Length: 531
Ligand code: NG1
Ligand code: ZN
Image (cartoon, rainbow, N blue to C red; front, side):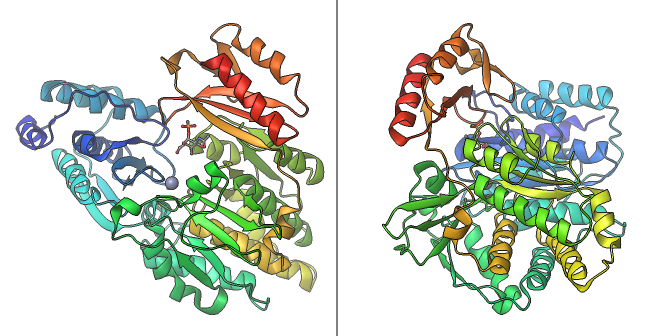
């Protein structure tokens, strides 16, 4: 059983405030000064998780992604680099809310017995953090949690979120046929750069990409990555001031650009530019450019999914292995025009799942090659073991087929299959644009986004909103969905849905319609129903 004296001594350093905490889609996330006890206890949970899995390495990332500098958060990563198993989120929540050391010990013991955890097993945990100033103290709180159960830890210092996922998977697969790469940031750079160079070999280089790093961890890490890419890619990094913490995500970054459908500060855009923005922990990316008439044009996660699916379908055909079936996974927030394009132009199956990366990832695994993206720019491509086997054993019966097979192999290496990764997604997009010699404007011509609007509505109790059908329909409060349907019917190409946010205390209303003004009116009228 747990050494209670040891626990009490450590726990005394991390007293719990009166707040109630929830481990949600984004882990624990809030103002950094509330997190000390939560993160200490998450350390205990990580140790239990590793012991449960026979000492496999568990990852811990301290970040609050696109949120303001004063926030922070923690997320645990399972051995293959995926998000913490869903059923453990409730344990994380319960531990964080225990009111006393006694309750804490009781809950640990109840987990040990119900989950059959052998406390004598070793525990191994690795830690990464973004550039937030609060990160160092929170890592220390987490390590104190690990000490409660004598877990071994390695602190990797500052990393992007996807790098931490990558390293976790590398450590757990080392020496097996599924070996994923060298478990270090350097190993990550080497793997991605080698694959990218193969993919653009012999092609004319594109003009420099203007890369907004949101004054976050993506800036120093992409700078570190550049030498590995050599002259295969040219990038001009903007918004790279990580020394002024308050500038993190301020008027910049993927979330700012996507939500406001506007360019970030830090660069005066011209119609010649191809631009991209990372979010604060570099697991999201969106692209954009300016039309000749000065209009801002966004290429979001849906556009990236369409581009990637188109490219992979063509490649699989060119390789002569079109037994490999490609599918795309979206959420209800995907633009209706993108879904139409995927289904009707690319003829690719599209699934819709509830918001949250774990839902998308899980569904994507059902396809041979599953492309998944949230509209906000978080996403990746996953290759099933059988697809990888086909790709690696195919030889091709013509030089053209051999080239396509080589590209598919490199593509599976350039893509971070553990989680959405802004670096890796950037290389994926740059690969396709380079191979096709496309400007962002040509890419954008695949389809025209329907005008859309996302609004937040503050309500008294968002828990009364219950959804079904991948969050596209409300079943509670009774009657509300009928009222929504009646309004939507009156709008050309109208679509709207209402769901409670999983990360903020608001209800989100999404609307799209044929024109900007109809969209705004639809959003306004649906918002009025909810309020
Ligand atoms: P919520 O707050 O549940 O809508 C938001 C994003 C998700 C996802 C999570 C996790 C929208 C509409 N929602 O979820 O896509 O990224 O945060 O960070 O963008
Ligand atoms: Zn993020």
